Each structure stands twice: as structure tokens, then as C-alpha cells.
Length: 216
Ligand SMILES: [Zn+2]
Ligand SMILES: [Zn+2]
Image (cartoon, rainbow, N blue to C red; front, side):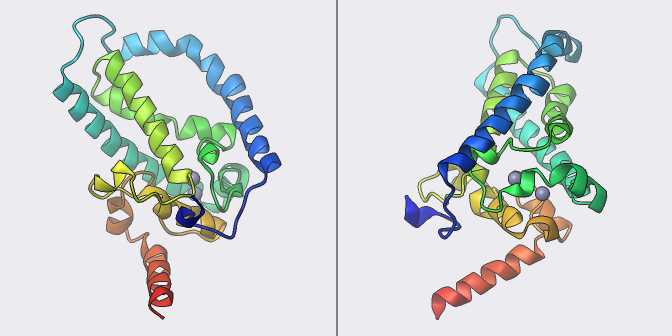
């Protein structure tokens, strides 16, 4: 697997991974866990269907496409705001502790960030409510996407490379690699927001340098 590593010189030791695991579990148990109490009333309030009939596959597919687009756009702007001096120092700094991210570091963040960046994930189902099956599938896919994006590996066989405008592991890895100074690659899923708002310049320059080094 080493040949697929994006930052081959960085090797996380077990204690560093375990620290990440403990932090993530603590946030999930103490912050995300208690929120489950309001989970069902919220689902009912949004208007998500919880009974038969099951949704058609085309309904599931198109709603999830819409959820990804809404998530990407709103996450882009909130993430960009989290890079303002105050918010970075107080909140977002924690997520950037991993300059060479690992899959488990996807939800490694300040508890406030988990709540703030959780909102874009709910915005899609609030605006376009569907069935609970779609809702659960959406969160599973969103988590898998976040894990892949933070994995630190650029796998040639990943099916996500066929998704148009998909950022992927290398794209977000660069955002972590640069850290606090990063003014590039704020989007969590696709590449077009950074392209439209001009926040991919650092990454493009970095790729050009890598390309040149490869051709030498
Ligand atoms: Zn960031
Ligand atoms: Zn990240």
C-alpha cells in the first residue's frame, strides 16, 4: 500500500492513531450521543417518511445527489469561515493537527466543529425530505466519503474517481498539508466551488511543481 501514500514520508505511530480514536469516541459519546434523544422528533418535524412503501431507487439516487451538492456548497462556506483567525485558533485548529490525515481523523475535530459542520449534512434532508432509508444511506455515504478523503491514500481502483468534479484524497490532503496558512481546497466533496471562488490556486501551483519534478 505504501506506493499509494500521498505523503510517503509521514508514518503515524500506533499511539498517535489511538489518541485520534479516543478523541473521536469521546466526542461521539459526549456530544453526538446525547443528540440522539431529539433524533426521532426532528425526523418527524422535517417530514421524513418512516413507514412503507419504500422509496424507489431513482428517488433515493436523485435525493442523495441533491444532498451532496447542498452539503458541498454550505460546507465550503462554513469551512472557509472556520479559517478566519479567531475561528481557526479556537475551533478549526484541532482538525488540522493531522497535517498528513488518516481515515480516522475525518471526524477528529473540536466538538463545536462537529456540531457546526454537521448542519450542512442536515440541510439537504430538511430542504428535500425523503424516506428514512435515504436519510440513513446519505449519512453512511457522507461518512465513507469523508474517510476516503482523509485516508492519506490515492487508490487507483477507487470507484469515486468516476464521479464528475470529485475532489478525493489528494485534494483534501493538500488542505491539511498546508495547515493554517491554507487558502486552498476548502470544499469537502467536489472541486468546482474552489474553482469558481478562486481558492484552488495554491493546489494548482503545487500540482505543477509535482508534475515538473516527475518529468525531470
Ligand atoms: Zn480547514
Ligand atoms: Zn479535513
